[in-house]
Image 1: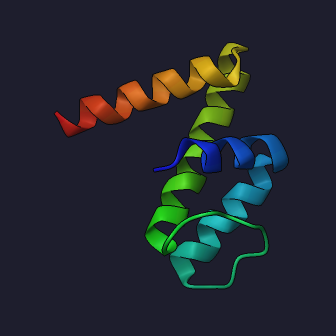
Image 2: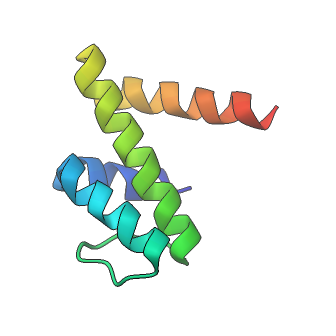
Length: 80
């Protein structure tokens, strides 16, 4: 997971674009948007993270950094 890649997605695409990218990656289709990542798994991680962060920003009216903090906290908790 690379935070700069996630930030680019949040700043440059709409949730609908990211949902389409998520579906394309799951179905093995070619991407219509630029998603950084070494492989499809990393690209999917970036897309899912960006979607979650965007939803959190909109739901709570918070900035990217705060939503990112909440996302990384959630990821850490799921690992433990």
